Image (cartoon, rainbow, N blue to C red; front, side, top):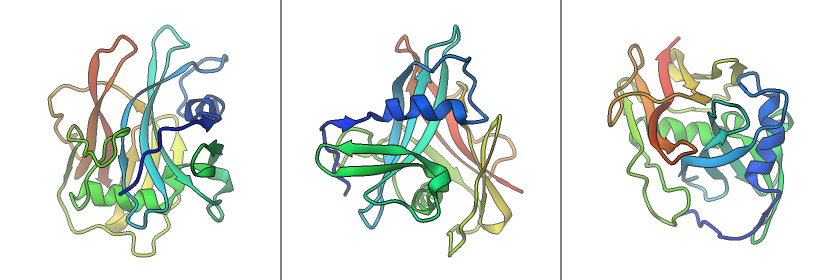
Length: 218
């Protein structure tokens, strides 16, 4: 079980994202730096206990209409080989020391555990409570078993989000810009063979729900 350390982190995750988000093609903000708040998300467990895995919702309130972004992140105690292009930044952790934070879509540990979550073979965990499951996360999948099996897919970004090749000719769509959807829990989107959804809060504290990830055939 991953241990959540309540300690100092410098720079903070949101400070790292303030510089990184505007470099993404799916960023919707203006010319000024985003003003970010942490609005929700969940964690997954690395079976080896080495990599921190977090799906963070960060809301930018710098524009008249706030925008909520989904940012999958991994935290490592050493650089991930051949992943310099995916580095969000480094942080000094009060307990763990230097940590390397990556765009998790480029990290095979996160991708493998996301496939396990879709299939119900692992469970989402609360962002800030040791050992607690996140019962608000909804998932579904219909199809053959999915494993990476040595596959190292390279994600691609465009103005709509991130697409990641997955086994059996499927495509993982990471919904980077979140929009509220009806239903509690929300149903699997039409044409998808799998999905992950969860709630978050807008800047006024209003609970909203969005589809975070969909799995579709290519």
